[in-house]
Image (cartoon, rainbow, N blue to C red; front, side):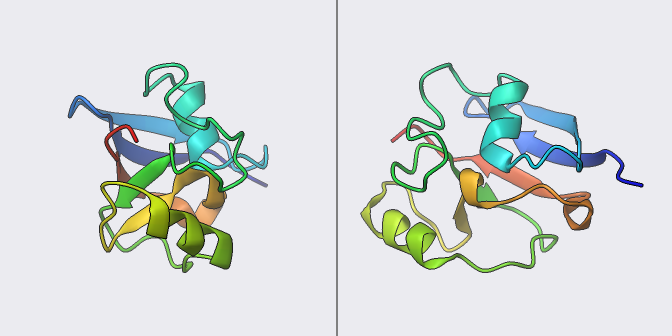
Length: 110
């Protein structure tokens, strides 16, 4: 039976949030950030989660996430600002039980 997991998110003001994420709704990290209103409206998920804007870029701060960047994500990050080695697009990280304990920081606005 699917259950909620805990994800720790530092917003763009440096405030840390510990949020519950449902694993049975086919959500991604970008949608979770929007759901909890952790970024100013209109500054995240501008392309609707199509990996075409990098507005949902975040930094993965622990080793919970085991997936690599896909080709679309890699291409978008080569054009984005504030990219680090641990940068990922939140829209490309599907929420699953394996992400319990994930810690991320939302990158500065593009």
